[in-house]
Length: 268
Image (tube, rainbow, N blue to C red; front, side, top):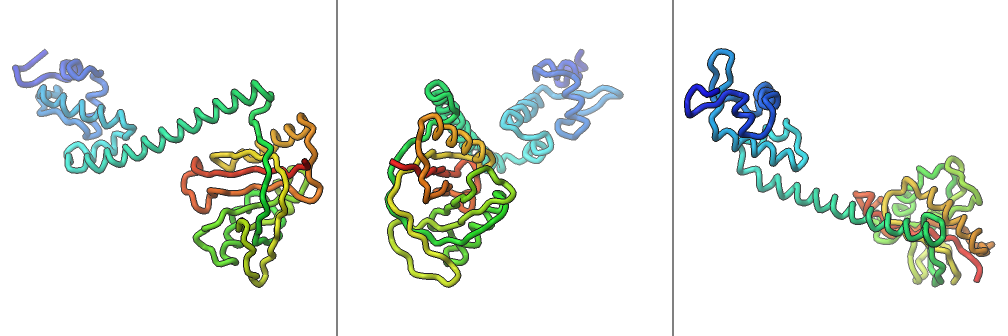
């Protein structure tokens, strides 16, 4: 098996690395772990090269590709920045998984209690003011409508939450009558040319706070509607459903950080 005490053939080297001969040959072919020298058709490795293999295994365990690993093998000075980056990525993934676990627990409890995926809450809403623009079109254009209204009112940094009020009674993803707005709280705002000011009075809502992607908000709205039916709640005849983007996609790069409140105005 050995030529001398200092070198190992491929099979013996693979054994001390606890891997396959095929893997060692592959690493040689892609230039990741070359043999110490060759003798005819044989690859000869020094035992200490197993440390290089273990380094490769460590970096692979952090989700790095072999191509990425190749750039780090001889650059220990880069490892600090690499693992700092990986720590940030893993922390973000941990937070995402924690949120998913929390959501799964919420869905389980809701399905057991109400036989619905969500359990919205009835709550009072204090009066508030909006800057608004009337829009008609697709749900997928809501973000562009929001950018427009925030630009119009001189808040390109999105200091206030956004809001969309839906005037259609049914699901209308391609042709919806909407009011896009800026949620201003309880202070009456100054007028702005071309922008309508709306005052929303005190009322009650069926509310659900959604954390995460917008991609299935329409699905959640179905459960809100069903909850209204199941619990014999009465919709407000003068106020329409709305989404309030407490932390919206215009300010959050990660969709897992989005916080959207779905509200259906109801009568006491």
